[in-house]
Image (tube, rainbow, N blue to C red; front, side, top):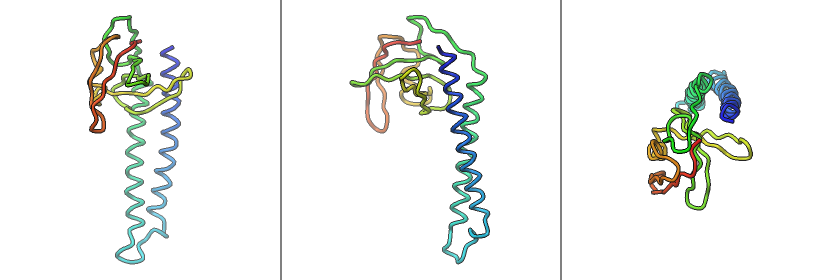
Length: 158
């Protein structure tokens, strides 16, 4: 099952990368287009387009890095009481909501629909990821996100 999940993440990231590269190219073309030359000292269209192109190119590199990690991944298998670490599929309850998370070094926030569930990458560098690392099924984690405190109960680790 995890191999299929990894394949779903790869497909999502490849799609995201194609979209981001296309957008970066379009923004670059807009920044260098003859029509983007400033008409006066207050005209910043070309400069703004170049900032957008740069940011999109940077995001494309980030996506490419996460994609490379997934393509070279060694999937870890977890037993019932194993602690959470990289490649753990984590089922949690946050408030009244159950969520499915995938612990991965990079790519926090990337989501994929898999077997009628939304699974989101959480990284060890995030507040929630830090709180979950090393916990097992049945444990509870306190974390802070967006300036708000939260509690997360680990239901299952796969």
